[in-house]
Amino acid sequence: MGYRGLVAEVYHYDFTSLYPWAGTQPLPYSKPTFLNDLKNITSVEGQIEVLMNRPGVYTFTVIDTPLSIRRPYYRITHECGYIAPYLVNCKDLKATSVELLYMIELGYGIMLQHGFNFQLAPHMATFFTDMYMTRNLR
Image (cartoon, rainbow, N blue to C red; front, top):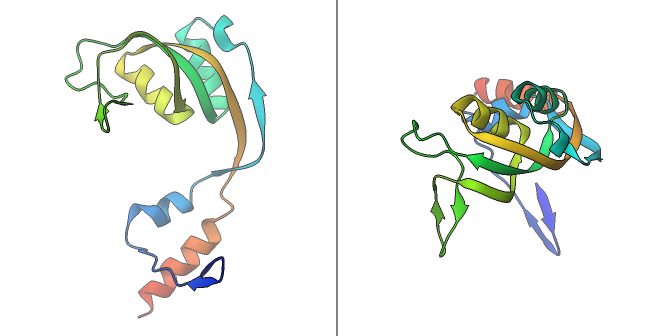
C-alpha cells in the first residue's frame, strides 16, 4: 500500500513478471560517489574494468557506432519520440554501467567522461522471494 497526500493507494504487484526477479538482484543503495576525470581511461579494457567494478550512471561520448549492427542500441529523443541513429562524436550522453558494457560488447567506441558510483546489495531479495512464495500458496 502506498500513501500520497491524503490518498491511500493499494498496488497490485505482478509477481510473475521479470520485476520480482530484478528485485532479487543487487540493487543500488548508499550515497553515490562522484567519479571525475574518466577521460584519461582510453583503453577498452580500462573502461570495462571501471564499469564492472564501479556500477552506476555515467556521462559519456559515443566516438562511433559500429556499422555492422542493424539497429543501433542507443536511442535519443527527437520530436516527441525516440530514434536510434548511428552516432559519431556525440557528447554528454547518459547510461548505466550495464548499458555501457553492452554497448562496448556491440562494438561501440565510447569515452567515459564522469559518473556516479553506487554500492550494490540484494536488500529486496527476501521481500520478493517471500511474496513470490505467497503467490504460489494460492
